[in-house]
Length: 208
Length: 258
Image (cartoon, rainbow over all chains, first blue to last red; front, side, top):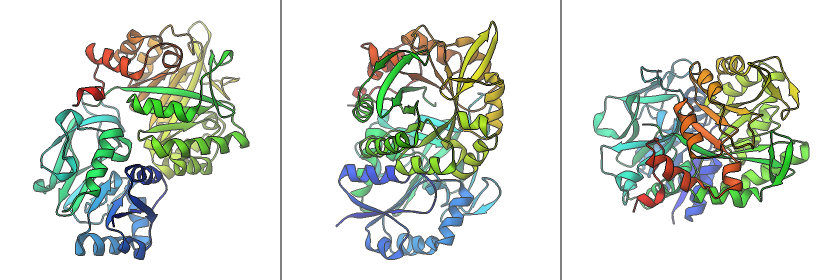
């Protein structure tokens, strides 16, 4: 049976992810317990707090090793959201320099206010452009690819073949990455109304 | 391109939705907060804001219950405030399902509070709410405690000071225009936006489509709307489609997907 572990690692709103899965009709638990994570079929790393704090909690709870075992070794479907995507990088520069999980050769840097006089944080609904075909966007047409973002930092990677989607905000930044059984998005599907619910539903039915 | 946002704003008093004019006059009842939030989710509003205007220990618990219930069925971002005085208040609201927290009076009473909140929960999660009124020609002042107490800050200086304390967004409300539906305070929006690096949500005065167009042209990232949605036949769907056809960069409505 399908069940999702929502990784509980910091201060913030993880309940929305839980509620969205409940709405779809999928069992989930908010947990940092390695046995419970082992018992679940899917894993979501939600986005809460800043990069450094997030990584500190992940390490303090030993979740870096648990996630490596479950996602990299066992190949469970994994979805990272917002900071949950950013920490897949090797290093993040939010309030200092912090080592990430390092699953991807990437760094996380600040959005800079540009000539178009953009507001930081990048907050609200924006269009993404898919650069990979992916099961999580099955049944989406181009107009539906609008999602809710709220962030001041973004991921920059040289691993171009793993870039799933990009988004335009002064610069063209990476809005999602995907490879093997791993997918991660800078935007919040759990806050993106019908399109987000549809994407989460596809995640649950995904067989990587 | 980032879309301009349409944000229904609701005021809670003892657990019910209410709407006044200029904060204190002509109280009108406006329904049940949970069912209203669901309706606006179905209408495809971009976010919504819910503020407890008469906060007490008792009402704080009711707000937490309301937020928990809303977050079970509403999958869009929502901002909650009213009576937020401590990091623990913020933590409880976030855990109940809120995405952004509004701080108003406590920012004035404790100048370090916004900074601490932003460091603890992330700056994107802290919205500073500024209620202001003109006290004599050309002189504006920030009011706290639900518009009851005047401070010595002018709204622009105060917003910039709060930006320096790492708040992620400003919700700017004109007390004199609240519920009047005669248009936003465009001069103030222009002045503030030209100096502000963070998103600006404007509130107070929306009475029609042109008012939203004007506010966006003046630099607003989002328009907060109460009376127009509560007391006229306008809905976010209708407003969105009108704005879209007027060339404003808003999300297309759901029925264009197919």
